[in-house]
Image (cartoon, rainbow, N blue to C red):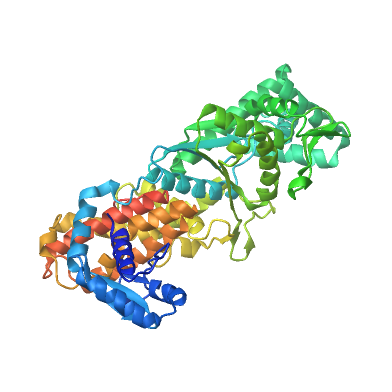
Length: 553
């Protein structure tokens, strides 16, 4: 039984003794550590219903609690108008330090989703186009949410849905036919797409040709189009894999739009009561659900993104007996997904309840929108390269092993932390200096605190919890909260709870380390044990964020 549950049960027993019924007892951590480790306003809540003085009721509850106070609790006191504060004991914190060291990588895990099967779909770039910074945001958030779910005991399937058909593909193939470059590279595909996109907007004949190419991509059978499509798709997907590897993501399942066309069209065609014809097209009237109308099959008989997404939703549940299917996209797709889900829900209401759509905001620079000099949204690859270059510049005078790999870990960690430290739906401002700072609210700050703990352990050894001092440190009073934070982040699908906690933890460690001599100190053995407990917690916490922990920085 964890300490939270233990205290709640003790309070409930005390209330029962007083003849007071209550449905729920909530505990919070006071903002000031001097006010204890847990606090509850239950006396004030109950006093309202019982017609009693809240402070007097709190005192009566504390009196009962003190008669059967367990070893984990040092002191219970009444504060203010009727708050009850709990101060945990030295014995409790010493036992927690020992438990963290023994549990190692299991520390912070829970089994709240044990036996469940959850798919998280994220990143979702389009072959024939560059992966942009929106995909980086989706990847960072999706990977962290997948890890939080995995950390809670669920069988977690990481999925990636990639748009390998559609007008963007036809535009790129048109550009390839015009530019006639034999060496197909990612850069060339980007140029070909830009060429085709411009022609589609400004040249009527080119637009007709691109529309025809689009049909040929779906139907297949045109040797030239098929060959250009095959090569372009291969080059794009190979390049995406390089970026996924750098980001630390390994997908379990890839879905492609080209594979969802037939499944989606069949869904629409077999459910004519849900969809209706309008000017030769097949549409879904979302107004009945307070939404809007969207086209699912065009008047030319081509499926839209909506139809393919219906196919994807169907295929996911056909492939796996999912308890939950999560999709991560940009905020701008929120209303679109509501219509798609409403249509799917009319056919599969039980499955629709197992679908969750999580959105993220935009990334901006302090000066405004994140864009290149040409005004186009900056690519994921160029941003990663620019961040890594900035890290290498900071590290140029440092003599460490595997400098290139360490620079990559720091740059990716800095970028991910900048994304994850905000609530998921908010826009973020990416500031290079702040994101890569070794001090303050940043990924490198946490990574550096971790490497510092490794250096201490390398020098002093593992330590022993038997050497604990009488005074409990601030570091200990934050360490034990990690499982609680990991669980909350999973329940709310909000990795930023982990970033806030780890920043507070690193600050406490750095303050403790600066003020209390670890090696050569009075309680050296316990100091080293506490350092190991911190190192394990920081490593496990950064893993939840998808951030690597280099040994040297």
